[in-house]
Image (cartoon, rainbow, N blue to C red; front, side, top):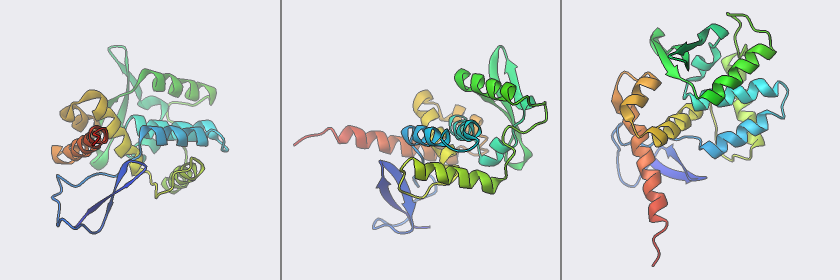
Amino acid sequence: MNTDLVTTNQNPEIVNRTPYGKHSDNSRLISFLSESEVNAMAAAAKTMRAGDRNELLILVTFQLALRISETLQLTKQHRVFMNGKPRLAILGKGNKPRIVAVPEVLSYRLGDFIGSHNMGDTDKLFPISRQRAWRIIKQCAVKAGIDRRVYCHLLRHGGAIARLKRSGNPKSLQIHLGHSDIKMTMRYLSTLQLMESLEIEDKVKF
Protein backbone atom coordinates (compact mmCIF):
# COMPACT_ATOMS: atom_id res chain seq x y z
CA MET A 1 0.00 0.00 0.00
CA ASN A 2 1.27 3.46 -0.86
CA THR A 3 1.33 5.90 2.01
CA ASP A 4 1.62 9.60 2.62
CA LEU A 5 2.42 11.46 5.82
CA VAL A 6 0.02 14.19 6.82
CA THR A 7 0.35 16.02 10.11
CA THR A 8 -2.59 17.16 12.19
CA ASN A 9 -1.99 18.54 15.67
CA GLN A 10 1.61 17.32 15.27
CA ASN A 11 0.51 13.70 14.91
CA PRO A 12 1.20 11.55 11.84
CA GLU A 13 -1.74 10.31 9.83
CA ILE A 14 -1.40 7.75 7.05
CA VAL A 15 -3.31 8.21 3.78
CA ASN A 16 -3.23 6.39 0.47
CA ARG A 17 -0.69 8.20 -1.70
CA THR A 18 2.83 9.55 -1.60
CA PRO A 19 5.09 11.42 -4.02
CA TYR A 20 7.98 9.25 -2.80
CA GLY A 21 6.68 5.79 -3.71
CA LYS A 22 6.05 2.83 -1.44
CA HIS A 23 7.20 2.53 2.15
CA SER A 24 8.01 -0.86 3.62
CA ASP A 25 5.88 -2.12 6.52
CA ASN A 26 8.79 -1.36 8.86
CA SER A 27 9.12 2.27 7.82
CA ARG A 28 5.41 3.11 7.59
CA LEU A 29 4.52 5.63 10.25
CA ILE A 30 1.81 5.11 12.81
CA SER A 31 -1.10 7.41 13.52
CA PHE A 32 -1.62 8.02 17.25
CA LEU A 33 -3.18 10.23 19.90
CA SER A 34 -0.79 12.41 21.87
CA GLU A 35 -0.79 12.40 25.66
CA SER A 36 -2.26 15.91 25.76
CA GLU A 37 -5.09 14.85 23.45
CA VAL A 38 -5.84 11.81 25.59
CA ASN A 39 -5.87 13.90 28.76
CA ALA A 40 -8.31 16.30 27.08
CA MET A 41 -10.51 13.35 26.13
CA ALA A 42 -10.39 11.98 29.68
CA ALA A 43 -11.43 15.38 31.04
CA ALA A 44 -14.31 15.47 28.56
CA ALA A 45 -15.35 11.96 29.60
CA LYS A 46 -15.82 13.12 33.19
CA THR A 47 -18.62 15.46 32.05
CA MET A 48 -20.62 12.60 30.54
CA ARG A 49 -23.05 10.15 32.06
CA ALA A 50 -21.03 7.37 33.72
CA GLY A 51 -18.13 9.81 33.58
CA ASP A 52 -15.88 7.97 36.02
CA ARG A 53 -16.19 4.77 33.99
CA ASN A 54 -15.65 6.52 30.66
CA GLU A 55 -12.62 8.43 31.95
CA LEU A 56 -11.08 5.21 33.25
CA LEU A 57 -11.83 3.43 29.97
CA ILE A 58 -9.72 6.01 28.14
CA LEU A 59 -6.90 6.13 30.68
CA VAL A 60 -6.56 2.34 31.00
CA THR A 61 -6.52 1.79 27.24
CA PHE A 62 -3.97 4.57 26.71
CA GLN A 63 -1.63 4.19 29.68
CA LEU A 64 -1.44 0.40 29.32
CA ALA A 65 -1.50 0.54 25.50
CA LEU A 66 -4.18 -2.13 25.35
CA ARG A 67 -6.37 -3.28 22.50
CA ILE A 68 -9.94 -2.20 23.23
CA SER A 69 -10.96 -5.88 23.43
CA GLU A 70 -8.35 -6.33 26.17
CA THR A 71 -9.67 -3.35 28.13
CA LEU A 72 -13.26 -4.57 27.91
CA GLN A 73 -12.37 -8.02 29.27
CA LEU A 74 -11.00 -6.64 32.54
CA THR A 75 -12.46 -7.75 35.87
CA LYS A 76 -11.37 -7.44 39.47
CA GLN A 77 -9.58 -10.78 39.30
CA HIS A 78 -7.35 -9.56 36.46
CA ARG A 79 -5.59 -7.32 38.98
CA VAL A 80 -2.56 -9.04 40.50
CA PHE A 81 0.54 -7.98 42.41
CA MET A 82 4.03 -9.30 41.76
CA ASN A 83 6.75 -8.37 44.25
CA GLY A 84 4.42 -5.70 45.54
CA LYS A 85 3.99 -4.11 42.10
CA PRO A 86 0.56 -3.77 40.43
CA ARG A 87 0.00 -5.85 37.31
CA LEU A 88 -2.85 -6.90 35.04
CA ALA A 89 -3.15 -10.43 33.71
CA ILE A 90 -4.29 -9.97 30.10
CA LEU A 91 -5.62 -12.50 27.62
CA GLY A 92 -4.45 -10.96 24.37
CA LYS A 93 -4.82 -11.53 20.65
CA GLY A 94 -4.98 -15.22 19.79
CA ASN A 95 -5.83 -15.99 23.44
CA LYS A 96 -2.20 -15.42 24.40
CA PRO A 97 -1.80 -14.56 28.11
CA ARG A 98 0.60 -11.87 29.25
CA ILE A 99 1.29 -9.75 32.32
CA VAL A 100 1.50 -5.98 31.97
CA ALA A 101 2.85 -3.41 34.40
CA VAL A 102 0.36 -0.84 35.70
CA PRO A 103 1.36 2.68 36.82
CA GLU A 104 0.73 2.99 40.56
CA VAL A 105 -1.58 5.99 40.28
CA LEU A 106 -3.72 4.17 37.71
CA SER A 107 -3.73 1.06 39.91
CA TYR A 108 -5.10 3.12 42.81
CA ARG A 109 -7.77 4.55 40.50
CA LEU A 110 -8.77 1.04 39.46
CA GLY A 111 -8.94 -0.10 43.08
CA ASP A 112 -11.08 2.87 44.08
CA PHE A 113 -13.39 2.32 41.11
CA ILE A 114 -13.83 -1.37 41.91
CA GLY A 115 -14.50 -0.60 45.57
CA SER A 116 -16.95 2.24 44.95
CA HIS A 117 -18.97 0.04 42.60
CA ASN A 118 -18.89 -3.02 44.90
CA MET A 119 -17.61 -5.23 42.09
CA GLY A 120 -17.22 -8.96 42.48
CA ASP A 121 -14.28 -10.94 41.14
CA THR A 122 -15.91 -11.65 37.78
CA ASP A 123 -17.76 -8.35 37.28
CA LYS A 124 -16.48 -6.50 34.25
CA LEU A 125 -15.01 -3.07 34.92
CA PHE A 126 -16.43 -1.85 31.62
CA PRO A 127 -19.66 -3.80 30.94
CA ILE A 128 -20.21 -2.29 27.51
CA SER A 129 -19.91 -3.52 23.93
CA ARG A 130 -17.03 -2.73 21.62
CA GLN A 131 -19.38 -0.58 19.55
CA ARG A 132 -20.41 1.40 22.63
CA ALA A 133 -16.76 1.91 23.60
CA TRP A 134 -16.04 3.21 20.10
CA ARG A 135 -18.92 5.71 20.35
CA ILE A 136 -17.77 6.90 23.78
CA ILE A 137 -14.21 7.48 22.56
CA LYS A 138 -15.43 9.26 19.44
CA GLN A 139 -17.76 11.48 21.49
CA CYS A 140 -14.97 12.35 23.94
CA ALA A 141 -12.70 13.30 21.04
CA VAL A 142 -15.35 15.67 19.67
CA LYS A 143 -15.89 17.20 23.12
CA ALA A 144 -12.11 17.64 23.45
CA GLY A 145 -11.99 19.53 20.16
CA ILE A 146 -9.91 16.95 18.28
CA ASP A 147 -10.71 17.70 14.67
CA ARG A 148 -9.77 14.41 12.99
CA ARG A 149 -10.91 10.82 12.84
CA VAL A 150 -10.41 9.13 16.21
CA TYR A 151 -10.89 5.43 16.87
CA CYS A 152 -10.07 3.04 19.71
CA HIS A 153 -6.74 1.73 18.41
CA LEU A 154 -5.25 5.25 18.36
CA LEU A 155 -5.26 5.06 22.17
CA ARG A 156 -3.13 1.91 22.04
CA HIS A 157 -0.78 3.52 19.52
CA GLY A 158 -0.51 6.68 21.63
CA GLY A 159 0.17 4.68 24.78
CA ALA A 160 2.87 2.66 23.02
CA ILE A 161 4.57 5.85 21.80
CA ALA A 162 4.36 7.40 25.28
CA ARG A 163 5.80 4.27 26.91
CA LEU A 164 8.63 4.03 24.39
CA LYS A 165 9.46 7.70 24.91
CA ARG A 166 9.79 7.07 28.65
CA SER A 167 11.61 3.73 28.53
CA GLY A 168 13.62 3.86 25.30
CA ASN A 169 13.38 0.06 25.19
CA PRO A 170 11.65 -1.43 22.10
CA LYS A 171 12.13 -5.05 23.27
CA SER A 172 10.41 -4.34 26.58
CA LEU A 173 7.58 -2.60 24.72
CA GLN A 174 7.22 -5.59 22.40
CA ILE A 175 6.64 -7.86 25.39
CA HIS A 176 4.26 -5.38 27.01
CA LEU A 177 2.19 -5.05 23.83
CA GLY A 178 2.16 -8.78 23.11
CA HIS A 179 3.72 -8.46 19.65
CA SER A 180 5.03 -11.78 18.31
CA ASP A 181 7.28 -9.91 15.85
CA ILE A 182 9.38 -6.89 16.85
CA LYS A 183 8.91 -5.39 13.37
CA MET A 184 5.58 -3.89 14.42
CA THR A 185 7.12 -2.49 17.59
CA MET A 186 9.91 -0.88 15.60
CA ARG A 187 7.32 1.12 13.68
CA TYR A 188 6.57 2.92 16.95
CA LEU A 189 10.28 3.67 17.29
CA SER A 190 10.43 5.04 13.74
CA THR A 191 7.41 7.26 14.40
CA LEU A 192 8.83 8.53 17.69
CA GLN A 193 12.22 9.26 16.12
CA LEU A 194 10.60 11.24 13.33
CA MET A 195 8.50 13.33 15.72
CA GLU A 196 11.51 14.03 17.95
CA SER A 197 13.69 14.94 14.97
CA LEU A 198 11.05 17.37 13.70
CA GLU A 199 10.88 19.03 17.13
CA ILE A 200 14.66 19.45 17.11
CA GLU A 201 14.79 20.74 13.54
CA ASP A 202 11.96 23.20 14.25
CA LYS A 203 14.42 25.04 16.49
CA VAL A 204 16.84 25.66 13.62
CA LYS A 205 16.78 29.33 12.60
CA PHE A 206 18.20 30.97 9.50
